[in-house]
Length: 287
Image 1 (tube, rainbow, N blue to C red):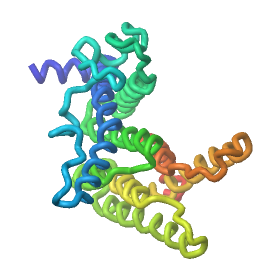
Image 2: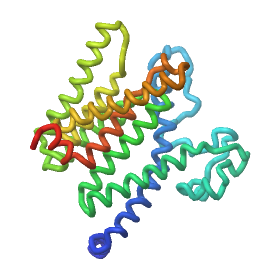
Image 3: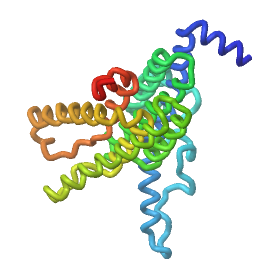
Image 4: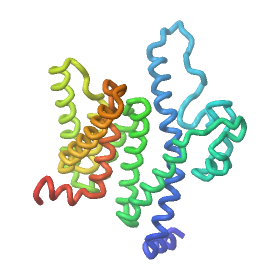
């Protein structure tokens, strides 16, 4: 069975790409759960750690994680059934509203599912039927998740950044996207560069210019792509963040003093570096 499926994917690249897009859509549905629940899980864990032994638990559920309780409408708490949870299609058939209370469902959910499917499909088309497609999908989907969480909460959870870092080192153990030596140096350099920028800025201005999660996120990108990509990722992310920041200053004065999460720009730069790492390597190293 498996050899037959493998042969079909090798002989028909578009079949493989289509299959990967479908898997990406399904994974995107789960990413929605992670994006919504993980920050709440972190908040509940923080509240529990601060709770006095004599105080009752602040947790609204006996168990609250990525799998329990069952997904429900945030407005009426109607439990979401299987037919209401089909990626993209359920949103279309329901008209973007809860089947029970008719309240609108956020467009974010199908957008993340579509983004996940398209990204995995693009990876499959770029890397073909290989282990690189699996590794790149893990890398990109983790970056997508971090982007959405950072945009909503300005958090980059250790629960994602640290496993992503270790996964990059493991994937490159026997030369995945780069050598193990380059991956280790990339992880160290990625962390230390932003750590240095953070402390330099803080000593000069007495303010915090970025969160510690940014250090770990760049370290994870370095672990996946190697130290050679660190300059390109920093340049691309800084350039895109500057363009957006200047646009906000020019067109929306109310947001001049608002903090701009840096994680999404690191994620975008990391994805660009993944697909065009050879060209970027040649540009920055001359090789």
